[in-house]
Length: 274
Image 1: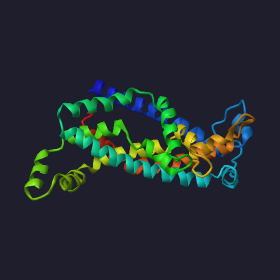
Image 2: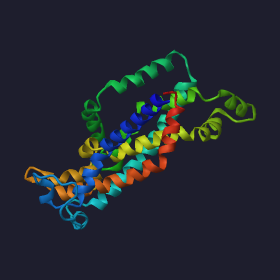
Image 3: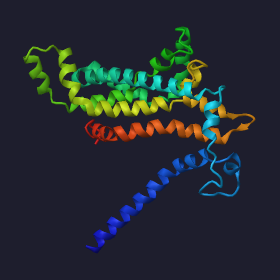
């Protein structure tokens, strides 16, 4: 009994330590967001700033050269469009790979998984050339369309559909549905957990994307992450505005994660990746 209690205490201690380490970067962002530049760059560390600077948010919003509100709107539009497109494309691809098990399907599955081994940065040059030839530079099409295919999301959907009972689809076909209507009326409504999980992952990744938006986006489609990088120049780093902008960028995703976390866990546990 004593050994079991000691084990439980050690587990809780380990969880508290890990939680504190996980929350430490967020604490630093919040602390520095309301600190002066002197407090941030001081050699002496204080857990709380000597003086709360509540003007950092005003300075961030009043900076017309950065346009943080416009950048947030662009990031939101990009994240929503890319999430919707990725979910639809990966949903259809994952279902096809799960239901068609002939040799060509296995080859396509292997090819899809092979793309996970290719570093994303190596594909940016050819994707940029194709995007430029289409005339999609500084457009939402250029930001969204190249990232709509996700091999990881496709694989998650495939694993989930492998566990989906085919008897339900057979019953719908007997009742008069065709394969297309059976998919949308039977399979999709019963796969809301994995759809929400994949959507959450893609949404957070799209919101935090930096490299591709920095290549394709310009003034009209500058995203939030690219706008924050404008505070780091060769002349120096504007720490108060940078940390306040980082805090503003984190808050929407925190609410999204808190609202969808139960769907995320439920979807991943039913995707075959146990």
